[in-house]
Image (tube, rainbow, N blue to C red; front, side):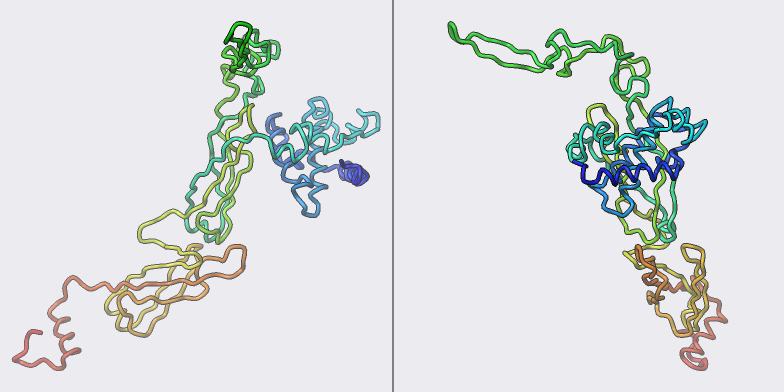
Amino acid sequence: MYSASYLLIIGLILAVVVNAADLYKALEVSRHASEQDIRKAYKRLSRKYHPDKNKDPGAEEKFVEVAHAYEVLSDQEKRQIYDRHGEEGLKAHEGGQGFHSNPFDMFSSFFGGGFAAQQQTRRGHTVIMDFEVSLADMYKGASIDFMMKKNVLCDHCRGSGAASDGDIHSCSGCGGSGVKIFKQQIFPGMFAQSQQTCNDCGGRGTVIVKKCPHCGGEKVIDHTGHYTLEVEAGMPEGYEVIFEGEGDESPDWEAGDVILRVKSAKTEGGWRRKESSLYWRESISVAEALLGFQRNITHLDGHIVEIDRKAVTQPSFVQIVEGEGMPHFHESTHGDLFIEYNVVLPTEISPEVRRKLIETFYGPVQHDRDEL
């Protein structure tokens, strides 16, 4: 299948070895990563960079690099040699041959077939959750750490549910087929045959004689994973961020995805957003409404928006400040800011102020007109 590009693959393998990149960095794991972490990293990255799926320049080279890193770090002996002596130590261990597996064969072996076959593998359900962040984070962009609970394969039994491989026996009830066949006589000399799922093994064909002490035979254990959500500046409300393959694990299916719908948290009396526009409500006095005013509004990222109004401001008047709204997603421009003014009237006024207002609006005070 890959004969046409075989020489290219060999060349890429040699390039990876010559560059001697950090294999842990290639898999995006720490040097203290567990075997399970390494498997998860290879599963995620090999799917991401497989040439049948990813046509970006450099994807195939990255696919080969990931395969080489997994080949070494998944082998306990090779990993120990690499940790102590690096790539040169591995070459010496292999007699200077530097033999490396075909990355496509490795992928097929890992997933039980080529990429197309892997795509048809039964997958777990996708989990969709709303994830609230502050509007300031959606304005500026932020990296938000969070934790999520899920089921992962038991690292002791690797999802078999048995204490050891020797504790998994073929079911005696069905002979390992997973089904029981029944014959029933209908008429003399005539029989009907039917089959049912074996009730001894549940259709698996095997039974466990000694359960795994770590998971109690459940095959999976509870795990709290640590993740980071990258919120980009101007991210739309409800934008979906996919954490591929981070759903519940099971030996019966490939883990599904976790999708976070990112939304801004609603706050009373604060900033409001509608697409790329921002809204702010500012309270002013009667004097400011009549005579004008200057204000400094602290924006979501801390910068100051200076307001200088000299005209009369009507109640509920909306002023538009161009370019002070939300960033346009993946662009360098911004929407607009809409400021709505709320004119606050005094609860009471002194006689002196009352007299001056009368003179201002109605002219000099007359003796026969003490009241409005």
